[in-house]
Image (cartoon, rainbow, N blue to C red; front, side, top):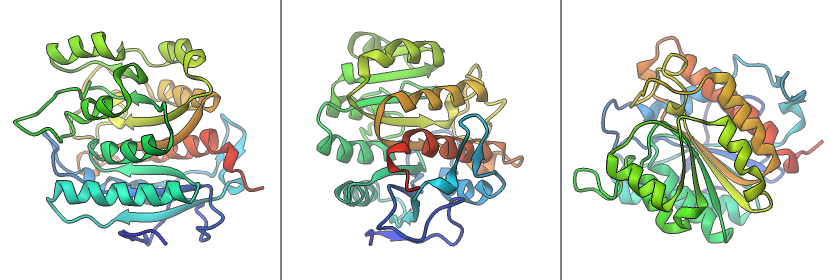
Length: 292
């Protein structure tokens, strides 16, 4: 059984009780220690689970049903409040155990820094890993207020693990001049756009292991206001769904969805969108784990 996790009372819709048979393992990482504007993402994983029960298990876009897939919701990693290094260590240990069992890690944040711990473990077992990053922000600062571990520096730390040419960033529309200069020189950045550049680069990364990191603020705050650092001018819901469906053409080996902050969206449309993305992602990238 997973270490440092607490089985959730309200698991994601359709999740199995049988960990051994599951191909995908959902785990929450409710870390919310370095958020720089509006806190609240620690409540994201559980709220996404709760509102998922307002969705159907069937996807009309994909003509697929969650009932035909085996995935296990392991609950949330138990994190010591305020202890960044120990929290990242625990998230990494849980990810490593999921991978060691030959399963697909699907991590729900929490702030974006959790991706560093997850990707570090995924990269250790998948040489040549590509990271596909959907976000409003570059997240490429080398440090933020003197801290090298921050949700504002997470992709800089990821770049150090996988190499910048293996980092593809979509929907980016905010960051410092230095971050954009760094991205243009060292990474693959696509400003504002999501679907069109993803279609362009699919042939380049097919056949390689891919990790997907999706910050909910890539979507315009008109559709997803419940996030810590909303940035106007983002993509639509239909565009992010199209992007998720396109991932089915790739060898996706892990996925995280981060930065949902329920406190800042009483309408709950952000959490509902996140839950729907999780559903569509399971149906898209989980095909190899189909149990029926």
